[in-house]
Image 1 (cartoon, protein in one colour):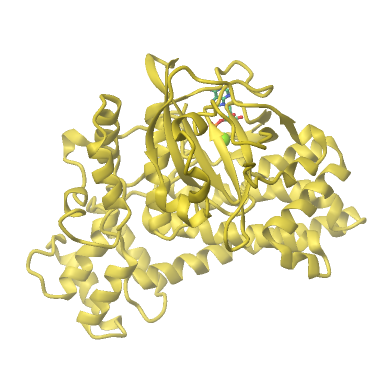
Image 2: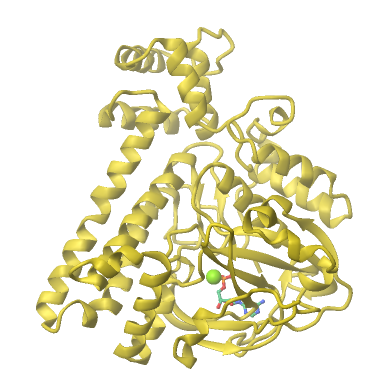
Length: 475
Ligand code: AMP
Ligand code: MG
């Protein structure tokens, strides 16, 4: 029976997509499958009689599928390029039981017209990494694309060395990027309008009712991104490659390449081996978010007003709201992390300065503060005069009794994040054929706010010899 896949995106002008099937792989083997996600999507009944390795490698298409690759452009590290799904195809759009529409995309599925010099393939390690980190982000309550399956292909991909290949099945609210608008703007004003209409219908239907729908669309994307990036900052997440082609119009975290969670707090932290200038350093993410949104606004100018000056003013006003919105979210989130009745900017910044100067673990500090509140003598915070002074100051500001504040803090502050050294250890084992460490890690990161027997082994920061200081792009 045909899968009820939809193809609304293919009603958009042809240059924005091309019809193409995945390239079959030699020996597909199912490594991971996300049963919970399949259930949530209402997909499970359709999986009953299929060979998952065959279907989620792209070897055997579900009946009725008409996959396509999306074209887009993007500013990569500030430089404009024409891009597209060079190693991905959208299998189709899937409507979940609540009526929401999701893209089901294969990543690593072979060459497309957008592959340029690339082989169209993906290595197993980075695909497993995306699976783990996107699951962790979801469990943290941060908007993200999800991972449905990883299938090893039985083929070798050549990077710096031969690596096992894999196909990841990614589920996203959509794959429309800032870069998709950049391509549309290069094509024609009509193409931008068609894409904007599609994005409004799919993600921001309320904009349709606004006096100025396209301005409302811009404002909506700005608001979503302000919320998203503030959440990244609160958990110490560094995206690593915030190019405009990796920024989703729907406001999900997308494209897990060289991303990482910070261990020791420092605002200048960079992991990505290709980010030599620190463009996408931890504390630079709001600035780069604003930069990307400015690229989006430029594409929408012709739709905002027939008068170019008026259009520019409207865009500018919308863009100027991004920083204040992000800061408001961030301060509110930091207040929650510290059980403060309202944000105290000086208190928060002083804590961060202290954390940086005394090289504290970002994640554990907030759990330790809660332990200190409970009077736990092994709280683990530094015992110097400056910390003592800050702690006294903080304590006087709590709205609730210490026990209650500590309990609330443990609901706001994760105990477990997918730490680089733990992720790497699990990936190495998986590549060597042992998936058990990966499952144990997944089990832990799926309950990030719990301190229990299964999460405890994943809470500790790396020891000096375990520290990973660089991550590599997810190719
Ligand atoms: P990314 O760094 O994953 O966001 O990819 C940037 C661009 O390069 C996108 O257009 C990808 O489709 C393309 N790309 C990345 N890896 C490959 C590959 N192995 N083969 C073909 N295209 C690729
Ligand atoms: Mg990308």
